[in-house]
Each structure stands twice: as C-alpha cells, then as structure tokens.
Length: 317
Image (cartoon, one colour):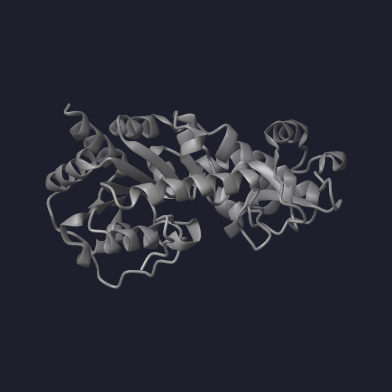
C-alpha cells in the first residue's frame, strides 16, 4: 500500500516504492479506439500527471546519433576515432578522457547541443494545449528543459535526474549546483583540437576539486535546494490528486530507468481505482498491465502522431 500519514500526504520516496508489474500485455485494440479512450480519460480528469522520458524528446525531433552526431561532433570522432563511445551524445559523455581539458572540450559542446541550444518544443506546446482547465504537473527524467521552454511553469516541473545547464562538485562535497551555460559558450568558442584552455577548467569553489555535470550518473549527484523544492511540490500535487480524478500520461518512458516513472505509475493505478494510465511509446515500451483492464491504454505508435491525435480529440477539432 502507499505510505500515507494522517494528512494523506505522499512523499517522492513513497511514490518510488512501487514494484514492477508481471502481467504486461500489448493491447490489440484498434488505434482509433485507443485514441478515443485516451481522450475520454483526459476529459474526465481534473488532475493530470505527465511522466516524460527520453522518448518524448526523440518524438519531438531531438537527435543524438548518426549524421547529426557526425555533423556536430565530427571533430571528436577525428581525435578519438569512431569507436563505440563516439557514435551518439549519450555514449560520448562516458568516454575516458585523458584530462579535464579534453573532458570539458566535449561536454561544453554536448551540454549546449542537448540543453540550452536544443529547441524541439512544437510537439511539447501541442501537448500542453490539451490540459486547459486541468491541474497539471510534470515528472521528468529528461535534463533538456523542453517543457519549460514550451511554456510550462518551472513550479509544475520536477526533473529528477538533473540538468544540462548545471554543474556541481564531482565528489558532491556540498549541496549546491551552478548554472554554467555562459561558461559552456566560452569553452565552446575557445576549444582547439578538442581541448579547452587549462584556465577554463571549472574547479569546485569549496574543495578545489574537479567539477562534473549535474546529471545522475553516480552516488555523488547533488540534489540542491531547487531539487528538493521541486520534490516537495510534486509531493503536494500527488497527495492532493491521488484521491481525485487523476490521469497519468506517460510519454516515452522505457525500461532504462523504469523505477522513477513507469513502475510507480503502474503502482498508483493498481491501488487507486480513480486513477487511469495512458502510456505512449513504441514496441514493448507500450505494454501495460493486463490487471488494469480498461483503466490503462498503451498506444504503440509514432508518438508525434498519437499526441497530435489525442490533443485534437480533447479540443474537439
């Protein structure tokens, strides 16, 4: 059961205590019927909790590998070779760079490309059009700020895994992050042969050690004051919404980090008959627990199309 106190409050940790479903199915309901089912769920809801994973950004047009990577990171492929690391932005971030100058040479370019300079918001804006008059909150594992750029208030967003705009002490010696967008631009302009000047390498202002991106890749991830404030707002929203007409709209969440959105969403829907689940994905990512019956719809389709069709249905276009 969900951990609730007498005030019916739900914390983020309690939300994360879900267990994975064991009865996944790929629904065989015709696409148009699934869209109609999703539209009805949204129209009937007073509260909407969005859960966005990497698939949402991809559906909106974000690119990470292939020709896009060669165009924007070909300099690094020439230096390090077209090895398994240098095939896409995600893998490149884990390359064992020989020094900090080389590390920030790539990461300054990557952080800008995947974060501050990324603008794939038209689909995000289209999606937000569906929720006029609803109480809305976003739980996201993305670090690219696309929903905020699309117009959703930062007060309605909890990005649990960090931000491409922020850096922190690599060892997490103190609970503070630093906006580094302008520093990244300076690094990007000053880079030569994949390296930035030594004097531009960021150092922790507290311990003097190396800095790192504020992305959850190890146990040193810094959850700063803003992170905890967002966590609190999420808890307040969910505590209020869990006993109301709530729809969970899951967007491109697969099995990479399912314990943050996917499994907890299933747990909420299993334990509350007033909560419905809409899951948009492709392939096995669109499977839903059979035990939820008609309270879950898993749409296996191009997400840009399914989002557009759902929004059109909600607006009565």
